[in-house]
Length: 291
Length: 130
Image (cartoon, rainbow over all chains, first blue to last red; front, side, top):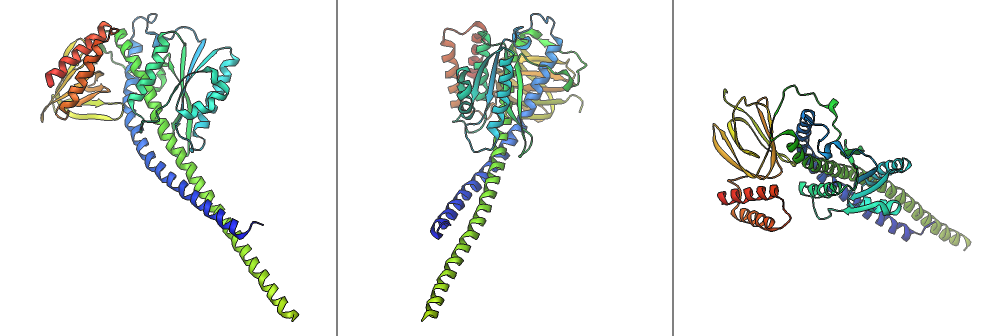
């Protein structure tokens, strides 16, 4: 059995760990509120954008010559995967969940004989992926210095993606991120952004015809890059809300576990202290009796 | 009521402005300024750098935009933009800073005509409000 002193030290160290996890939980809770707010505020923009694109792509006159960002290159040989993770750890399964989702997608691609290229956003994803897919990672972007997800960062990422697309470096682009459902549940998502998947079902078809100025094609050419930024920004917002949620529940668990451990160790400590006292008493009594 | 319609400006980060009682909005559309009144035909267009003028009963407001998309439908005007400022709130040194950046950008060789045109517009507008 560990000595009294050792036990005392362990209790102290668990207690101080608990203090840290408790503080982290509080911080995450405060940040979560903010991240959730901004995710909600960002929604109208991406919804409107989606809506307009939907209307445009329906009204486009010449489907053959539609912008490539919408219609794709006609091949699906080279896949670009943008894996969006956090820059900081200690947030439970947040990063691993995205990576798991991405990895299963990767292995499906390679079994189909497709070529794979990876861009990682956030250093944690890069750390986990470079061991197995190191040679596939063509770019690693990290926004350690930005405090909150902002549109400027999203535009940077989309610029890189579009540049690569225009150089014919890939045919299909998919982004991986965690969708925020609630504090305990985050759903890893894979979303294809190039070519754009227009899902007509999720939107009521608009009846009226729009007038376009200039014509549809030109608007689309201008709009599609913006839409990519918007999608990425949306993913970043969802991700940051998810990250804080995951961290909050992870730290909550850690705090609880530390509390249990302190209780257990305290009982053990008291028991061994009692045992030591009893032992001493026995020694004194038996000493006195022998006299 | 009567001549009023709904007007909304959305940024990626938040809803920037929402008004129920505007009577006319003039936007710097790509092919020229466009005034929008109630019961305008449904239209989608995009913006070049310029000034959005919003008229309502309470008076006139002006906003500076760099780019954006407008959509008008069922007497709802929405503008999606990533860069918009109320001209009242914008500080002079910020305008100077933006002007300086734009002038730097136009000096680079690789800009194509369309980009050049947009930056030219931007400089002109910035100068006019300065």
